[in-house]
Amino acid sequence: MTSVSSSSTERSTTAAPEPVFTESARLQARLHDLVPGGAHTYARGSDQYPEHMTPVIEHGRGAHVWDVDGNRYVEYGMGLRSVTLGHAYEPVLDAVRDVLGRGLSFSRPSRLEVDAAEDFLGLVAGADMVKFAKNGSDATTAALKLARAATGRDMVALADQPFFSTDDWFIGTTPMNAGIPATTREGTVGFTYNDLGSLRALFDAHPGRIAAVFMEAATALHDPAPGFLEGVRELCTAEGAVLVFDEMITGFRWSAAGAQSLYGVTPDLSTWGKAMGNGFPVSALAGRRELMELGGLRTDDERVFLLSTTHGPETVGLTAFRAVVEAYRREDPVATMRRQGEKLAEGAAQVIAAAGLAEHVDVVGHPACLVFRTRDRDGRPSQEMRTVFLAELLRRGVLGQSFVISAAHTDADVEQTVAAVEAALPAYERALTHGAAAVLDGRPVAPALRATAAPRRLR
Image (cartoon, rainbow, N blue to C red):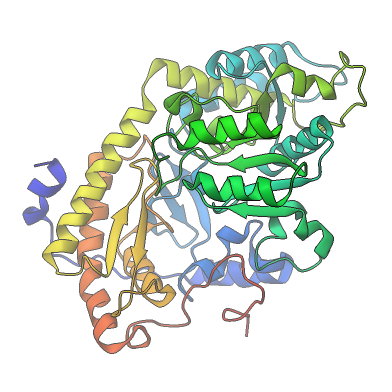
């Protein structure tokens, strides 16, 4: 038995004080007056949390955050998966503090750009060149532009995975596609992950049109089936399309060298971000030299305007990245996340099974990228039941839309989380029996990417 399960009978039955959200509510209302949607990322929006329970964060350290009302939480999701070493991780902060006194942005490249590029390419064996930026969407869109220039084609094939870019070529495929021309939307086509035939059918349906195939090599819920990634690689080569692996999530969670290193399949291009800087903004496009040089000075072809950004090479982001690389050399955050994630999944499964609710709520996925699934009394995925679960966790000091863990989560953090899951289950069962409205105070959460503000339009 793990420490989680062996201590489950020793958990305190003393109820913690009910958290209050007075100042958070005031600031959230002010945010809605100042910022469209009340947040700068849709996944961080108030509609993603129970109504009247939308904490506004004051600060964080390790695996914990404190809101403006003084409530303390064990946090999951960790900055939309961007933090693997913990909030305010001192070795990264020390490196950043040191570089601040030497300037941030110059009119010519700095020595740091050489060092950071060498660090990156030392990790990612299948890439010959790299270019840094500030967010993942810029990197993925640059990869598509490069693929279109290299192939002379216009279309892109996407795996049926959650998110690739904020830019039109991807967002046009979602329900939140207002303002995107139909011609743009028509240039993006989809295939099914782990179904090589569905990708082959796209090439057959659009001969000579598909410039690139975008996919995550693995996701929280799905590993590649035997031979699938190899088949995609062979098909892209045969069809003359550029294979792009999105390593935004898998990079530094599955491995510092990305999922491509685990599965032994090398893409033509790969895109990186999130945990590269442990929360500091830095992203990257990497790949084969003959493709990347189309944006350089060693080509006789028409040049690609490739990731020319003011802040891409600023010293803070690149210094944070180098400090993260050093932390991964010195320690083994990937192993820690796997170990703690396995403890959490096992502990949650035990208390859920003991309550007889395993058909209605479960914790599943890659240990470093766990999610919880919520279902109604008929076994259907349910936003209402998700809201019940989120609210009960919040009441017990656990904040997160998932159980995506970090290397900073301790045994005590995992124990608190499993105890919170256990304590949430009676309310969950009442909601199953009597309906979620009998338990909830306010409206349920709603998908972040949806066509209208309803059902969480501000009143």
